[in-house]
Image (cartoon, rainbow, N blue to C red; front, side, top):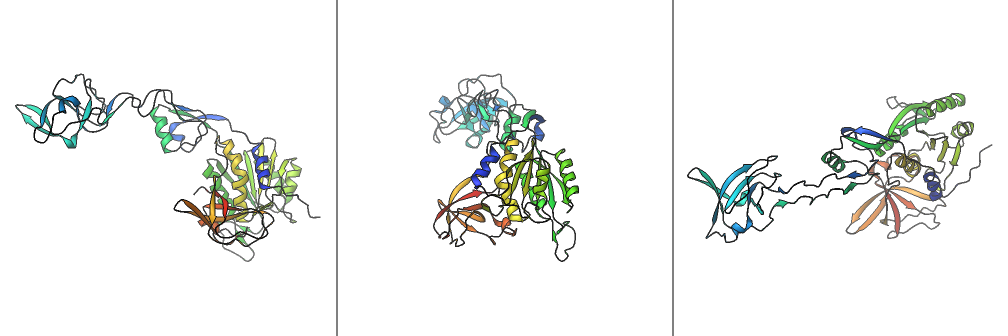
Length: 413
């Protein structure tokens, strides 16, 4: 007898998932291993940046008041009394009509009120001494980076929950974070199911298709910062499938199957969940594609039964697995960002379920326009190559007209 499932709304399914999520434990990793991870502590400035007044240009440290009367007709000359390289500090104090050669980033010497840029100066030698000629006034504080103008001591540079990218890596290094507290990366096991599946390097034969979903899922998992672990193709043998799932749940934090989530004779995922006494959050959602997506928990482990159709598998992951993994990783941004977009064409297809259409959005001045790409079928994978959004099409018996505004979810492109 075919199992009867009662679909629940998409937003309710997402809420059920988010209500059971939790963060992974915190671990400390070397700075060079922190890229792409999520901060588990606030990044705090323990000193100001710059930590001293420094030169923003190559040139000369001068007293601005000495140049007040300078002009092309009446240039003034300053005696060069020292030379400071980057990282060096001068022990001299600038006197009247004196200059000190300085490099970008070097600490300005005492008495300095401006930096004369090198390209605006002219040096010459006279009786064994170096002089610099100035033919225009230099404003006070010109080209001086003052202590703390970038960052004040005690300022929070980045809060926990932020993913570490190039900017955060720079700041972590600047403030001496040789070890960084981050959230542990969850391990996500992946199984494909179905006798119709072939290894990716196998030649095609009648009735068979290559196993593509597992590679798609690995990419999606990796893009979030988690660790995918592919376990292969499950055989159409219930007892063997059950044992493999049991064993794998001992090794991973999350387990995903693609295929076998429906109600056919060889679709074992539902039976396996019952055998494992899993708490099923839902096993059908009022959506297309991916209505048969199943999400459950077994103790503190998660089991996702995703569709075997590529588009449905992809959408099911982005809607329901993403919030769980992002929470485990410590991220504050759990779902794909949304915005409004204007339809570039009619959508005539009526549907009683919410549809997530693979689409391409673009900016047209200040307006975002969107149009579908490829065939709107759950088994069509090619549309995912060009899509940069999921167009959310609410249930509607008449469809939608070009120019109407709908929501889109922006993919990680």
